[in-house]
Length: 322
Image (cartoon, rainbow, N blue to C red; front, top):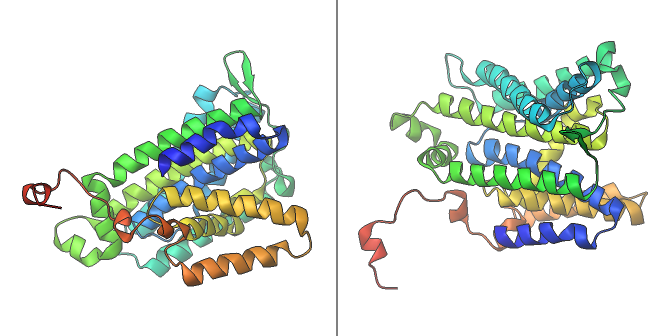
């Protein structure tokens, strides 16, 4: 499944027009953002309604680096964006998850939602960040003396980063740590009974998700050429929830497929049904959630894919007759 998706993605710029390649690059970056949320919610069961906080904070951070410090090198921008997302997630996750008593799902959901809303309002009212207008005219990323502008080059850069992050996430969720996360999602009390520090596991994966969102935010800022308060806010945070819910949580590839389909359908509907396209899209999302609660990926992947495996199969299983 992953190989087919990658093959199609590699060939797309060869057949797409230039403006569609730019659109496809944006979708790939949003898929990276969705991957960060799927790791947090799909595997650890943490409903983060503030994932855009880490995405937008990194976007603003690298935009300020470009504007005030004239730093556009890819070797500084991308690590900086990742670090900003990581630090923001550590601070928020430490407050919400590492208290004296275990945090409830509702507490974490509302806490992340409040953080995202507060960041949005702060950006809108802070003149240094451009207020309502954000920070425009961000220069292009640079690699040495070469500018990386929108088009096929930026597309393959984003695709390469997405592929690497995807493989790292897949390795993580297939490890012993990943199985502990799956157990945490299914039955947190039992995992704690086995001796795992459940809240620490949550904080770790929450920070990793924030780092990936920060990486996506830094790519997004330079691709779009400007940042604005919406990328920090609740609407954008809800958008990534829909990506993962539509594609299928806890599978990684489902987050990518959900992002591609929603963004692609939205693009087509908005071009052909400009007055009613949000209603049509909402009905489609509702139908999928009603009849395929595990997402579109459930057509090709079973429930076992959301749990995975670790190590080799038991000897008696390997030697059993088919």
